[in-house]
Image (cartoon, rainbow, N blue to C red; front, side, top):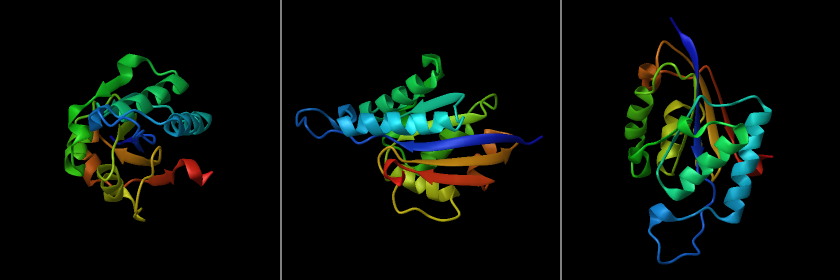
Length: 166
């Protein structure tokens, strides 16, 4: 039995480079990154796109972006899953994470980093993208019997959106 599954691959908002003494994983969002995250979250919410589950890299900039989306969409905190393997992972690692999603979730947002997220998106997209900009997203809708099939399934529909797109 096939079900519709939605996946949104979302790159974190623009990060700040104002702090020389902190590690990469702890870099925060810049003010523009915060504003763009709110704008993109509202854009999805206004279109009725709300996740059942949020999966995020543990990096400060990705997790904060995920938290902003959760706030805008009124998603409870227990629907945010922090996955250590996203931070330094390759697209194959992310595909394995997606294949293990519980089938009770039909709409999932995943927050992380480039270049991995652009490679991941291009795994699915009919028309390749050069780069997912900060706070950019690729939305995919699949007909699947379970998330375990996502890596080898072409989406039924797709879109690519980012802050400067309008």
